[in-house]
Image (cartoon, rainbow, N blue to C red; front, side):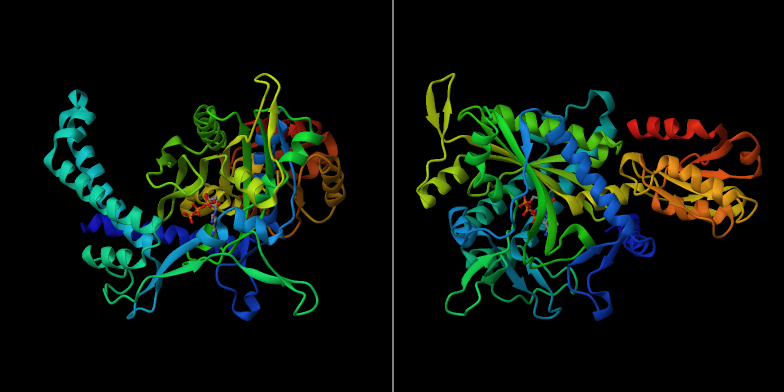
Length: 514
Ligand code: ATP
């Protein structure tokens, strides 16, 4: 590997470490049960993190529910009848193949080891294309290059050969075939470089527990591994009581639980996490149109937060889950590289069909236009709230050198997501300035999350609010008492302006629109 690449990787890893440290120091995210040395892959959102998370959730809800007359939101229970998970396929098929390296004692998802190997080959192809693009400039024909360049073709063939072995092995739960593939490809443990692997074993990711007070009478139930099933089992109730007409959607946000085999990378892969899902019910045969529509809509939502377009990309799935006839991920460039942030899936009538079969209840829609009843098809959008939080944090985190040799860490959060919108500071603790500052704060806090602070120098207070991403700081000084003006300081540009107190609310409101 060339040297510059190593450096770049180190920097990215550093960035994740810095974000984790920053998240802790400034009250965004703490490790769960930290005083007991933590619980693996479980995290708590602290005072600022809970606000940021809530704002992301609200922004999603607003875009999906408030802005769509034909989408309604629900809040279903985490516990569900155990048969739900038989019908959905989770009891039989929600398994990941795991493998351990005997030397490093590290555990991996066997399919992910192979997928990472594929990603490396794909990166080689991309590099080849980029090089040629630079060489040929405007006359470059990428399609032709991909179809004729021998090195690209050889790598594409290599990838196809691997996929031809991996996907059937996964579909048939053939653990020996996956192990053989890992061995044939010579995949080594990323930690130790060792190829000393255990057998591959299946592992069901659902957590189970008992419901009921006596051992004999207790029923085994599961903590939901996705929120979607709570929507499917309520489909008919919502459709009827809301008098919903197809196409329509049901959205919900809530906790999901997965006993992940490999849970690293901070809040990217957790065992308890939160999803924001929407199931869109459509006429059979129209699902591809809506699938494309929702892919587009969701990408626009991400971009509406002002994160540059290059940070996102689609990844269309070659291998589809048992319930899907088309699927794509929206990937985000996290500090550890491009990874799945959201999934858009065309789930066919699999789920409603299966619930009809297992419950014996009809889950049909009578389409008045077609005068026909059918089990609707479903297009789903499913995003992890915690992953979105990490995406927002990693984009917002900035270290800046300032004039005079100083530096600052500033969280350039989209203002509408920032935990606090305004911080109000009296310049000193005396001369009636705190009282005036409180009065200003009282005028703003019905509309905005505000923070009052009087400790330390103004400079230090600015730094603290840069670090949590507060878009505006308002300082009250002696002149305020005379003419009812304050200094308002903007987070990103650090510019300060003297304005009348009654203008502050409007300035903040204007910024929150962007
Ligand atoms: P992955 O391939 O990363 O395991 P997945 O394809 O199993 O994810 P889905 O079942 O499609 O994920 O879940 C929808 C979304 O829920 C994902 O795009 C992701 O944002 C989020 N998600 C899934 N698993 C986790 C997890 N363990 N921790 C945090 N978020 C998760």
